[in-house]
Length: 220
Image 1 (cartoon, rainbow, N blue to C red):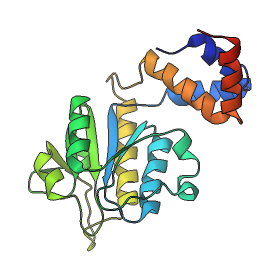
Image 2 (spheres, rainbow, N blue to C red; image 1 turned 180 degrees about the vertical axis):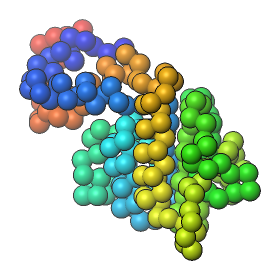
Image 3 (cartoon, one colour; image 1 turned 120 degrees about the vertical axis):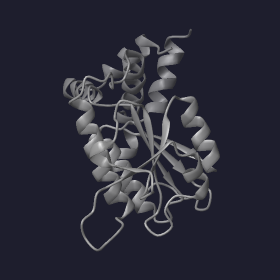
Image 4 (cartoon, helix red, strand yellow; image 1 turned 90 degrees about the vertical axis):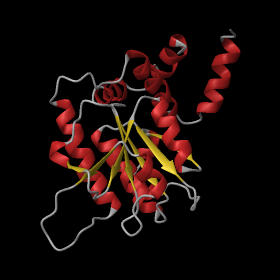
């Protein structure tokens, strides 16, 4: 449960333009789709995927770091890490199980005999879209767990795209279709309150000192 008094206290520190910007961005945020990347060695690619999530309104990015434990490249992310929720997992199974419990179907983005072209993908179901590396693709574990397979139509000689490019194409296509549909894709009121509080805290310098002062003056 969000402490509304505390939220109002923090938002009063922000400018009106900043608060209005939060509300306008949150209108276009969604958890209907979520993105997962698996063992991407070059972290600038993961950072670029996170940036695409932020730009096109995907609120959560799931990162599986079974082989390569690295931090997000903040330069590539361009501040997106302040606005996108990042969930990390040390194994594919942990990620898949968590997302299934949240109600997502598991979709592997890779050419497959039972794959679906991007323009034909059914956007009505909450989906977790998994991306692997350009060279290795997704692990066999993810492929076995997948409920469906999605691919980008290509007409050239090259049969694969860099993960950051393919993610941007798919995210833009699906979120645009989602916003033009009658699907209930937006964040709930409670989810919006949670993000308003988190974003306010991310926007205020010396937030720890301000928090301490507030709770000392307003003991519960």
